[in-house]
Length: 119
Length: 158
Image 1 (cartoon, rainbow over the protein chains, first blue to last red):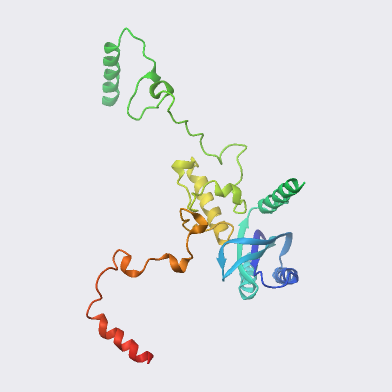
Image 2: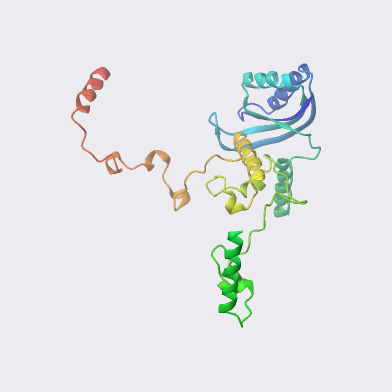
């Protein structure tokens, strides 16, 4: 069982509930492949650095998972088939960090700054 | 051995020339030597600090940390060479993969579109290109060969 980080982007023109639906589906696939989801992060709607399939924004979801090596192909195959997922990246990591990722930290920092500005 | 000999000789000569005056090594200028404040006055470059990712307090290279990665990119979004950033070779390789991963996730751009001198005043993409005749390499008269071809397509359209 190796640890992986899976990040995928969902197209922005679907209803927000779709984010959870896709997450549920992916989690099922991972469980079927005898894996575990150790960490889930919703990065929310972000502006893409460049358009992907003509979309300029997307819902990011970041997962920390443990999977047996053969399971990765299966999960990636299912992600490829999912129409709402416009991009995904799987990265092998030594261990899944329990802290919030840099993106979440940046988000919190920006939120704090905005609050300060408004106050 | 021979090399050592010649070097020793050179040193000896130097001493003979400036024998009575004690010269500190930082006052001498040799090719490949260090530029020191004394030699160049105030306009000297500060020495590179060394690899920013080595050492006990170094930040981890993470493809999700856009802020950190952006420091090692040019204004156009290209990776900066090591000799400008001081990153060591091993870490530069790691950094390169991290940047490429961030690009795949659209956290970083592959390129940044060229900005006009006046930014937003720049015309939309469709209007930006000058007509063909004004562009270098396109200012020739149309060749005779292309004429019948154009006619043929016109006929098809009709």
